[in-house]
Structure formats: structure tokens, C-alpha cells
Image (cartoon, rainbow, N blue to C red; front, side, top):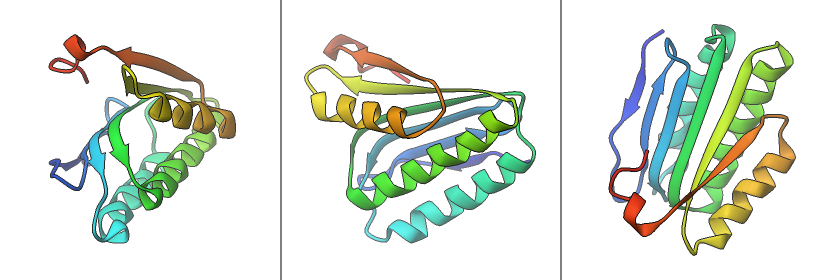
Length: 133
């Protein structure tokens, strides 16, 4: 299965999904003008991954901001991770949030409550931001 890679822009996050390694990264801001145009290929790729996953999947989410429509798409991806857990695969979500951004931390907590996938929360201090995932 091919990698999925989208460069980040002012409105869309970096997406770097590697099926062979089982490593996924969403990073940046997600406020696309046309959310379906951006997120549909991501969700479709992930459907393919669910059919042929790596034994272990690491899902990294490092977003500084996202809007409601992106939130729904991110939650859809997290629900798809439930399918992997149900099939006996190892899955973990690494949720990164910035120091002082309690809203992003709380959104991650809400997501963790809604899915079966274990979450690890990573506080990023200002000094960490230059080298963070």
C-alpha cells in the first residue's frame, strides 16, 4: 500500500501515513475551505489500511487548531482505529498539545473517552515546539 502524504498549508495539516510502518501523523492546522475535498482522500486511504494493517499502529495527532468539520473527520479516523483494536491489533494514539492549551487537551480527553484505543497525552512546552513531532 502506498504512503499518503500531503504537505501542510495555512489551512490544512501535514498528513503523513505510512502503512508499512503503521505510523500516521497529522500535524498543523485544519481549517480547510472544502473539508470533504481534503478529508475524503484521507478517510478513503485509511479504509484501505484497515483492510491490510500493520500489526502495530501508532497514530500521532499534533494539531494546534482545527474546526468543527475537521473534528468530525478526525473522530471518524479514530473510530476506524476501533476496528483494528477489535481485530487484535496494537494501536495507540499520541495526542500532542501545547502548554496552556487546555482546550486541545480536553478535546483529546473527549476523543479518548469515545473510542477503545489507548491514548497517551504529550504536553509540549514552548521550548519543545521546534523539534516536536
